[in-house]
Image (cartoon, rainbow, N blue to C red):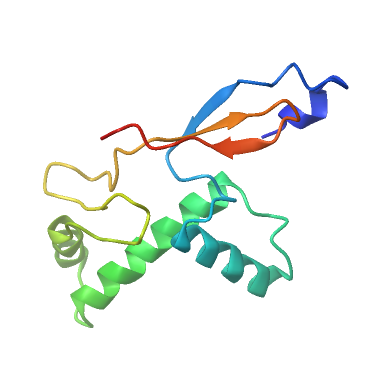
Length: 130
């Protein structure tokens, strides 16, 4: 998010602005997001590159690894797709289960939100989907 680059001194330009994402806030206290930041720091020496895109990639990689582990060594494209389509109720600790089916190849329909405060700092919004 580049909004901080164009903020006035008062910060009023971003206070109250809400953004939505397909993954949780990358600085949240969620256990899986914390694990992501730890792995990022371990690989790159810091969490400075933490962001929504890399968190989404991290979660996609976790799903892919889970599928490979469930599938086993004798793999074809069709058998791997079948394994993915059978993956349901995967709990990565995000607060929502992930999964696929023959007719749904999107692991999640969840949307997470953050809101900017008067200093243009992102703050997690509570889950209002239930």
